[in-house]
Each structure stands twice: as C-alpha cells, then as structure tokens.
Image (cartoon, rainbow, N blue to C red):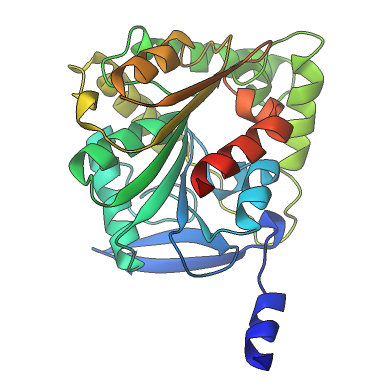
Length: 288
C-alpha cells in the first residue's frame, strides 16, 4: 500500500511542470508531454494551427489532468517533433494514429481545438474504434462554408499584430472589445507559466504547410459525419472570425446526439476566455 501512496504523490497535475517526452514511430520522433494519473482511458489533446506544446491553456489542461491521464503532442514537423508537416489533414490524422499506437493505446478520448478538431474528425472517421469520446472546439466540418477563408483572416491578423507588437492570437482568438481584450492578455500570460523546457516554436514553412492543408480541407467534399456514434461535445464562442461559429452549429447538426455550447461575447478562443465554466463542463462530459 505504501508504494501506491508514493506514486500518487508524484503525479504531476500542473501543465507547467508536465514532463517533456519523445517517442519514435515510422521514422518520426514525436515530442509530447503527459501528466495526470496513469491508467484508464487517456485524453489526447489536438492543438491548433501554428501551435506547439506551449499553446495549451493550463486552465483547461490542469482541471482535466487532476483525475485523467492527459497527453499533448506536436504533430510531425511541428515544434520539437521531427519530419515535415504533411500537406493534408488526412495525413495529419494518420500521423496522430501512428503516435497514439506507438504509445500503446487502443482507446482514447479526444480533446481538440480548431485545426486539431479537423484532424480529430478525420482520425475518428478512419479509426472509429480508437475513440470513445470527442470534444470538438472552435472547429468545423470538412467542406464547411467559408472554412478556406481561414488563410486570409490569419495573414491579415498576423500583420495587425505585428504592427501593434501583440501576439496574433489576441486578434484571432478574442473580440477586440472590453471583454475580449483583457481575456486575450490573460490567456497569453497563462501560456508563459511554464518557464523551463519550453518547446521550439513552429517554423514558417511548417505553418504555411498547415494553412495549405486547412484550405484543402475547407474546399473538399464534406465527410459523412452521420457515421459518428461517439458522444461528442462541440463548443465555440458566438463570434468566431477564424472558423465561423455557424460551422459549430453545422457540426452539431451533422453529428447525431452531439451537445453544443456557444459562449456569448467571445470569439475563436471562447473556451479559453470562459475556462472557468468550460473546463468543468468538459470534465463532466468526459466523466459521464
């Protein structure tokens, strides 16, 4: 019994202190972090466009890691993972599958945001037995209306941010109003909480490859999401300029039995702005 207690004491539940790890599969070394108690079905986090391991909000990760095994990872060619970013979302889903199998899991829960949600949809369509529950936030379906416009919006806001010496996410993820601006600053600050062993930033080449893949996904014929029977939670802000909020409603219509949460007065980063209500909701959904 004594041994069990000691191992429980050493469980890391703070993302700022999560151990950085690597695993090699099919010639690619994937950088990942894990935290929370081992055992049970892990929650694998799929991150957004241009993001690395350092882009997850600890206020979302930490509450889930309090009682679940959490894994975040860099896709191929991103951050500290080796190889080149593929030119399609399907290929990214294949890489995610390779990574998950390399870790030895045959059942996971998925938590995804934005581009990560596109990858997650392709993963679950290709490997329905691998996924138990699906959280899709700030994302849209393949072939969704205006999804390919992400590229123009992203570049415009990068320019705006450069001119004002801000982080592009302040423009892309949050409304530029009295609620959004402080929420944006607080979010950016939380991303700095990890001070040691930070990830490598994404390269411009990798970022451009991701944008191309999103554009292709947006212009493709829709996937048949009626095949999904997985419990699914869909969330977004009501004013998402990046992946229009209407696409969350579209996903909700297409995925039978899915639940939809739309946060008022918030944008693409609605789950981060509303972390105090969203994290417990996500936790409750995953535990159900």
